[in-house]
Image 1 (tube, rainbow, N blue to C red):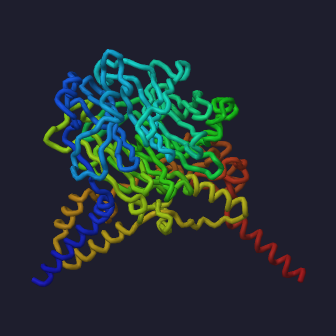
Image 2 (cartoon, rainbow, N blue to C red):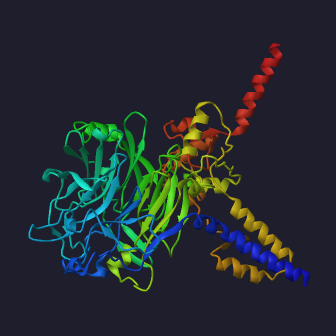
Amino acid sequence: MRCRALSIVVTIALLVVLLDSAIAINDKLRIAYQWKQIDYEWPSNDIKRLFPDYKQEDNLPLGLEVAGDRLFITVPRWRQGVAASLNYIKLNGTNDSPPLIPYPSWEAHQYGAAGVPEIVSTFRVRADRCNRLWVLDTGLTDILGSPEQQAPPALIVYDLMNDRVLRKYVIPSDQRTTDSLFANIAVEDYSCEDSYGYLGDLGGPGLVVYSWSLRKSWLVKHHSFHPDPMGGEFKVSGISFQWNDGLFGMALAPTGDGYSTMYYHPLSSGMEFSVSTRLLRDTQRASAAETSHEFQTLGSRGPNGQSSVSFLDPKTGVLFYALTNLNTIACWRPQNKFSVQQQGYVYQDNINMIFPNDLKIDRNGNLWILSDRLPIFMYSQLDLRDYNFRILTGSSEQLIMGTVCDSTYTTTTIYNHRDHMDHMDHMDHMDHINRIDHKDHTMSLTPRIGNFASFMKIEIATVLLLTCLIDESTVSKRLKGLGMIQKQGHWVPRALKEKRPLYAQRHDKVILLHDNARPHVAKPVKTYLETLKWEVLPHQPVKTYIAPSDFHLFRYINNYINIINNKLKININNK
């Protein structure tokens, strides 16, 4: 009976251990607002009658921004029934499903005798430190129906102190195409009078740079703005679809010299890139062929790593970004290499955060995220009985605690060589090259970032369960239910795949090249090499620029030892 009671306790402990990571991730954000459907704060029925096309089910929020005591929410004109494309709610309100208030007024969104409204359709906005709200108006309506370009794309800047238009700038026709869709904006506001707006065109694709002081813009083109042909497959809530969207996510990291590093990526891609705004501001050099190399490829976000938006927290220096396929908010510290091992997950929720579509960080260091189930809205039908749109918030500092993005995060040495080879990346490769250059032929491994605590807890808990004489089938059933699999007698979270199976089959072959092709060595050559007593390396070379005779093949170790012994004897005799 005592053992049975203990087994129950240990079973509960095991479940807690296995779930503590998920709980730790998901308890760092709270739901600030949520809606089943979007509605507006209609001043009167007379005002509502001025919007005869309004249909509540046509309204889906997409972008957000926090400025002062207001939280701005965009509602692009997906269909004809959208009332107002730019709105706000009061942060000091008590309603967790508040109606939206059109910004700057109802009149700014009304179709009338004057033609199109002041704001036609905006995806995202940005508030700067100069109390200005930069609104990127696409001018496109009925996006999911019969798209109509009612007005040219334009940048509208409002004074947040009095909600009046400071400036409206129409993007020149030679800086856009018929496929252009300006869906995101980043603002560089070191100086209020010398600010720059970076307008991302996912359809062009291209980047329009606008100078506040010069009152003009220019187009920057680069191949990294284009979508990845292999990155257009998406799957959200069981819905598979293909998108072919270019430049989308843009985040600015100040460099302290009046410029910034822009981290950016296309939506249909798993890769991240960077470029200095010093180059982007230079109208002559920005798109020149000789400066193309200044656009840097940082690395991959891994499988299903397509990301919508990103934002760099100036307080922690950490880049946050939304992984749309995974319903996840991830992070990366720019001081680290952009590898999968150096990227952390700070929040993941397949219920409360389906398709995170925008995120921002306010002046107090709070992260704000808007999720809207956009793919379900586009390709299926929203359940109007459920909460479909949510805004979540939490402290950016708390979110990164315990993740690889935490500046206090400690490294863990990988002891198992097979695990190391499975996770080996470019940094390991360069490390080995540097050792060889410095005559260091040791192959010991350097510490790498990684947290194996959860795996170790699982092993300990499993041993405790078995020690308490719990039936093995019960343990197996529990672990399988948690998504684990058994490999070589051990329960692991996933299967480890052999990274280089072809080399495992070629240990008896002569390898003169560093690819996975069939050995290009004729039989007479192989026979001749064997007569010279050359030793064949059974692994892939890491220093490919050395001649094969110098590196790929070595004489047997016995010959080397004999040479050393002879030298020692000579030295002894000389003494």
